[in-house]
Amino acid sequence: MLAPKNNRRGGADHVRGGAGTPVGTPTGRFPGRPFEGSREGPRLTAPRAAFTVPGAPITCRSPDMSDLRHLALSSNAWPFAEARGVLKHLGGGVPDKGYVLFETGYGPSGLPHVGTFAEVARTTMVRHAFSTLSDIPTRLFAFSDDMDGLRKVPDNIPERDMVARHLGRPLTSIPDPFGTHESFGHHNNARLQAFLDAFGFDYEFHSATECYKSGRFDRVLLTVLERYDAVTGVILPTLGPERRATYSPFLPLCPKTGRVLQAVVVHRDVDAGTIVYEDEDGGTQEVPVTGGHCKLQWKADWAMRWVALGVEYEMSGKDLIDSVRLSGKICRVLGAVPPVGFTYELFLDENGEKISKSRGNGLAVEEWLRYAPPETLALFMYRKPKAAKRLYFDVIPRTVDEYLGHLRGFPGEEGAKRLDNPAWHIHQGNPPAEDVQLSYNVLLNLASVCHTEDKAVLWHFISRHGGGAAAQKSPVLDKLVDCAINYYRDFVKPAKRYRAATEDEKRALADLAQALDALPRDADGETIQNAVYEIGKRHPFPDLKSWFRALYEILLGQSEGPRMGSFIALYGLDESTALIRRAIAGEDLSLQ
Image 1 (spheres, rainbow, N blue to C red):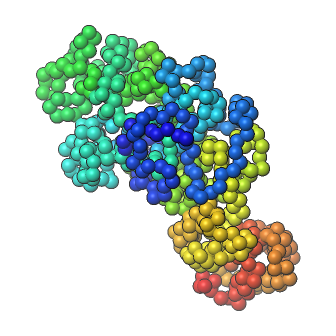
Image 2 (image 1 turned 45 degrees about the vertical axis):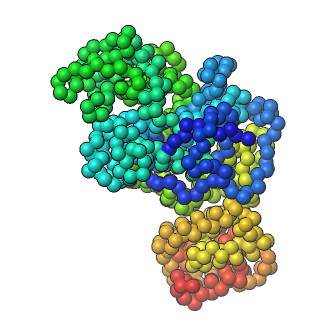
Image 3 (image 1 turned 180 degrees about the vertical axis):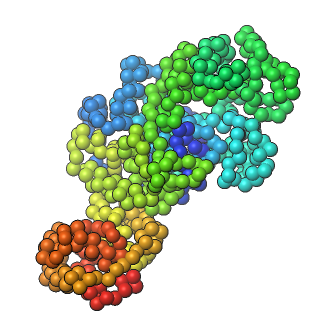
């Protein structure tokens, strides 16, 4: 039984180093999770299983824990490789705070997007892998950099003129343009929490504003002041002459305007814990570096947070490689060891260009979830995280079918092979035990040939083919039917272009219809596929690929399609021969 989580007040935002289109909260939620998050106390336990499919029976329980741990020590799956790195980082001991801290970070000037999902999903996989290897408790912090000064007004918010008047102020000091929360930062933090809760992630939310103002960072901030020259010595070589002359790791908050200032620091008093800076009016101000009167510049801030919170693991995008290196140096200056890191590649759009929130290219999480279950998005994030990947609509069907393949293979696998199966990591060791024999592409083509967006029509064919399969007993498949209908409606249907058969093709189609008529009514997909092959060989097609392309273009209105034997078995022999004879007669197959 999991203990409740604490200090989770909200959330929305983008992952540092990630990229994607801003989105709202996904509509699908998982049972057993409070939408607003509970705040009843700290949680020190293994992570909760995300991506559990409602209603699906859970089988395939893990083997004995000692055996599992032994196998995990040599598993090639990248989450286990990362987890072993954390174990090595610990040097065989338990952190003084009593737990291992995994962290993800966000800059809450925007809404959650695919990068948010990617970083938390991947970190959750590593965290679960670690809990398989070790009994040391773990926690995951979702940290919001909400004390950063707003530099640009987002394009996708109301009251942009009002927000523009507050540029430079911390996000948590700017009125909420949506009118629902205490501040713009609180609004976006709430969106983040709702977003993460919708996927069932187990995490604790933390706010930079609260940590700075509550004094949680004070001890390390005073260390930064004490070692000021060493900290600046890390950053100065990376700056140009003009910026080097004015750089300070401390950014005071102006008492008059509330803005975060990049001010020249003219004096430091280590004993008093204060700095003196040149204010915007030409005078000087003395402020404490503690209590939320100052915040740190980005790279020093990241290092300070690692030290203050005791972070053992944090991943980031490849665009932050230099930041990780410099923050690691500052971390050592402050007397600590940097956390274990993992650099992932960024996402590309359909043209191979980096996804950008401001440009709005690429695929949003809510769009993916319209066409496929969240587990499939988790698979997309699991695969080769260090390789750049195109994230666009046409990758969805292939990813869904790959996920189904992993799910089907899991029950028959033993030992190390299970730990290498992505389904183990997506479902934290317990994938749903539903045997989905139909591919997503077959469902798309069934909707296409039936010219239907009616779920009941598709289930009629599925139930007949699957020996009485029913939606209520097949939650994974039932969800796929919903998603396939959406994908068919939005992408397949508008692109369908039927063509008439040539005389040679008509003769081949007539031969195929006769061959199908001669088969037993309960012939399986393999038997039907062999018959289709034999017809293609008998007729003057350049190759079998040309024969199948002709079938797709004439019968389905598309250049590619499913394995014909499996599709005909699902659609029905009688229905398929009727369709073929309509094509031979020259009827318009775009009409029902």
